[in-house]
Amino acid sequence: MAGNSDPLTPRAKIAVTAGKAVAAASRAAGRGSGSVIGGKVALRLDPDLLARLAQHLDVTLVSATNGKTTTTRLIAEALKAAGPVVSNALGANMPAGITSALAAGSEARYGVIEVDEKYLVGVAQATEPQCIALLNLSRDQLDRAAETRMLAENWREGLTGSKAVIVANADDPLVVWAASSSPNVIWVAAGQMWKDDAWSCPACGGVMQRPGDDWFCGECGFRRPTPSWALSGDHVLDPHGSAWPIHLQLPGRANKANAASSAAVAAVFGVPPQVALERMYQVQAVAGRYDVVQFQGRDLRLLLAKNPAGWLETFSLIDPPPTPVILSVNARGADGTDTSWLWDVDYTRLTGHPICVVGDRKLDLAVRLEVANQQFQVCEDLDQAVQLCPPGRIEVIANYTAFQDLRRRVGN
Image 1: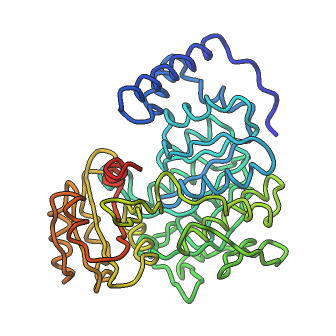
Image 2 (image 1 turned 90 degrees about the horizontal axis):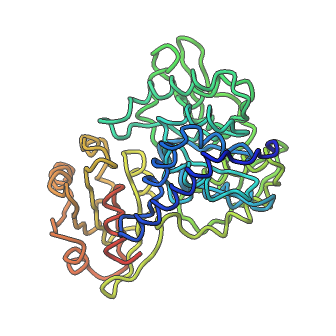
Image 3 (image 1 turned 30 degrees about the vertical axis):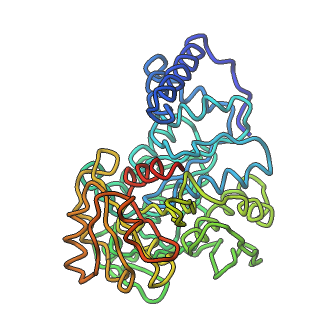
């Protein structure tokens, strides 16, 4: 456990109080949770506040392109078996949002923190984590984030010699290359469904060879490490070879992979796999994701997909045709304003589904679906889309701000 907390300085206390007041005012004005603006105000008053708030915590950081919010939630549930936990459960994953979350955790023992990929190194320097979970890297928000090889290099350089235990996905070459600069790595065979960002060797630029589940570079010898934890069907295999059943209320293989990584993290803190996995069953939804809501007398399941890898995983878990599907895409600041990623998504996987399209960029999405030879209808809003959908539960897939818009409309 981290050392005993020094009392917060008067300046830090003022910063925390001011941040909470601003966040409360933001909520009262109907402008969201207020965590980001509250954190920004607090950090302006005390730039070292994040480090001060993390002093008394055993911190785990979770970073990835996809799955970090869910994995953060699963780890937090598992670690509650060992003591109180504070976490940024709603996904505000940049320094301001993280600071707001930790400000509410003065009595916690563990901090489980989701971190945006670009900010991982800086947050790690401030919080001195005991554990860092690295899940995957793929293309996302190309107008604001560096391309994946540059992000991996940033992680690799920033984590060199880190004292943290790194729990890393052995099946993602970019993650392996980034984590390999650290002296203490636990490799997890969590799988990699989306491979289109990992065909070139991050170490030398050569072409990766991928026989079966293995991978290696034929030019420099960089290869998949031997994992000590693995996802195997509906079980997690621990380093002793014991198989522990995964029982989740969250759907899909990707969430089983998240559970495998989460079990490995929990074990770092002494929580046995059986206990960790049993506690993960409590998670029914994550910040509205996977929720089934009633709207206009219909059942809608809300699914978040922000980039090509995320859409691919989401297509794998929706109900089969003729289940109706509503797709919604925006391109606001939080989404990234570049929608070229739509052309990297294989929308032929929706063949046979009745499709309705909404959102700020519904016409961009309509062109993409037309090229993919899909049958669809462009709708003005969610209300019209639901009315046009044939009977049955509706799968609603949306990117980030479109997802938030939909949640507000259905009162979720």
